[in-house]
Length: 194
Length: 157
Image (cartoon, rainbow over all chains, first blue to last red; front, side, top):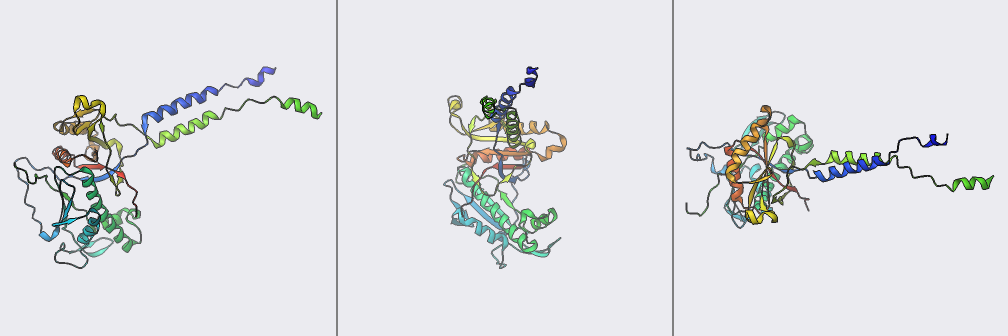
């Protein structure tokens, strides 16, 4: 009669089993989610073809060069990476219709109407073989940041929201108004005997 | 009466541990949900650069990784201390990259092949010469969607 009281299953080892599983998962998994800068590479050239001479109006190109000392040359001037964002924004936007900045064209964009945009601008990023990867990523990052800020500004102006909170079609419209054009040039060997 | 009750209470009941497994299982599920399986064992040392505009990688099953860095201490003897490339679990030469990408892609579902992303996980001290070679190899292999792995920095302004 007295024994009936304790007849439930002894579940104290259940905790041990669960602990074991827990530790197994702790060891075999990692917390880190990978993040990064997404880019699209240009199409490969046929092997027997030389790189085509890019037929771009000079005022439409924004040249960023990084040398082996990780120094930056933007449009022929030495520049600090912290100033690049402002300069790039100025270039992409061309607010005052400056003849030295990219050509503006009127384009009819759904949801936004007719807008003057710098449709054909290109940011050309060139680097040396000895450039440090960190410096390269910093420059990439500043350029992406310039685009992101411009898109946010336009989104706030037109839809009163930041870009990330917009609907998909609104995002498309903004992207059309401010297309991201970063060209990673064919690698060249600067100052090397070939 | 009062005295009898006191005697009975002196027997301390065993601690109830029946809810302990539940708690542990809760932990277990939490970790299973927030973590991911380790991709590989690193043979090269990779400290990714940092950037503020990073995006989260959305589809892990469609991502292939290229690791670039200096070999770990235990491999320095056999592989030297120069920057090396790691594909999957082994060291590889740059000339093997193209074939690796092509074979990885052909192992995928046909509908997923065009969505394949290659993540370049390179150490921040890597020279761009190596990265350029990788980019050229990826272009030849038609793997045009790439991601430069970078850690998120907290913007101090």
